[in-house]
Figure 1 (cartoon, rainbow, N blue to C red):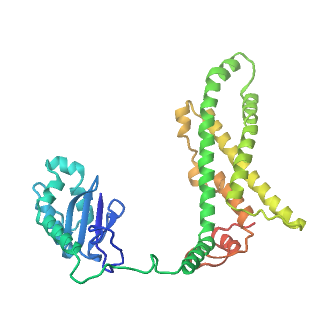
Figure 2 (cartoon, helix red, strand yellow; figure 1 turned 90 degrees about the horizontal axis):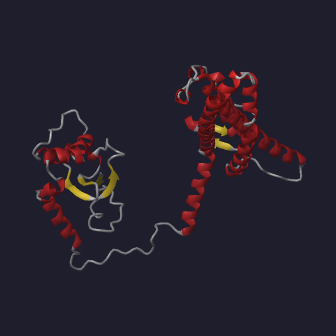
Figure 3 (cartoon, rainbow, N blue to C red; figure 1 turned 90 degrees about the vertical axis):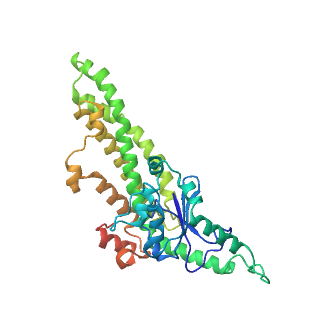
Length: 347
């Protein structure tokens, strides 16, 4: 469902008769919209872009409320209820079906419809002696001014937001790939346990410990391949340190950071894979293993392996960066200082 409100400042350039009066917002995203903050003109559309209300909102939305309350079967709005919420609830397809009426037909037979059509006709006819509105340029600023503004904006984003973006991306990647590893290994282990391990252990071929060790080691080559493929791709996409100059110390530092990145990701994939295998081993079925979460995962923070993964990744890649940033809470300093002060992470 969409609504439109005419702006007070008139900054929106009209491209049609409807847009000349209204600008549009998605009411599902702003259900607590305060109509009285704008010029009191509302355009409300249901699915398919069909208009079911167009006209004045009124002081404290009284015109809008009276219009919908006049429809037979509509529940009057409670005095302490939000207008936007009530309007959305009263105009849903389910409400139309319950009332046995089409709000589109109701609107086209209303005074609001006739008034808005008359206003569109009036504003569409140019006055005698008037000239078409014309601007010498499409944009209010020169190309150089636009470029300077965009460059300043990009620089601002890089300094104040990229740190949070990188840390958020690392957290998301660790969780997503780790949980995938845990989930994908469980069906394989469950099938092997049911079809082979129980039978062969009962036959006296081997005990649980050698079987578990071999089962874990066979995953290592696959985890290593996953780490190399993921690490090489993401390390350079995130733009971690990769400077190579003749000074050997710079080369060593860059190579060491890359090695640490691969090492932490390898350990992450490994413990998630082994956790999936552990869950299968402890649970009677795969379905139970899917929801098996040990208690310490929730409250014992320092034993949560993701904590150490993120500290290792962020500390090894970012905790020695001296680039100045403006961080949350008014922090001004370097990336290194912010990580130490806010998160307690050091290189």
